Image 1 (cartoon, rainbow, N blue to C red):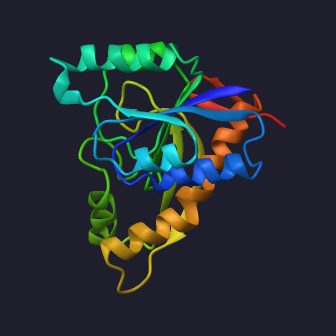
Image 2: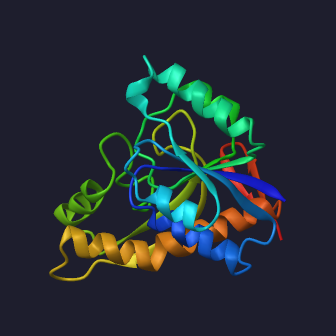
Length: 208
């Protein structure tokens, strides 16, 4: 059984889909061991507690720099035997020490088809605003392993979503979540927990 730690910053809709998948048998070899929020008022903490999962906040402002904050996260996760870290709407920057501690074991979901609309500043509604401004006909979501390059890690799964005439950023955000993010993230986690993901030369290979 693979122990997972989920890092969150907000409402926790992606976290809920992970918990639902686990409850429904969609992640047979994995279990969420702990949920850590970057803010004490993140509703995701309540979702975790309702599911009987340990949950607490580690706030960036309580630490002098990124490295010490990252060390606190590393200590909290490793002390609980966490093998896979899932970034589910975690908006706080971590240091390279965090990436090194969990190399190819930090999974992130991004609301676009990377490498398009990724990198610094592309998060939340900003991504969907940029997609609409560019006049894209397709967008989607990407699950990837996080590395020291923002949104630059090896891609695990992707799914395209249609951009419709008259879409607002909010409407597009919702469709990308419902049609892509909520499906891809639990599936990618399950593949990891089944030992079916292999990273070689910067690419993810999915084993049968």
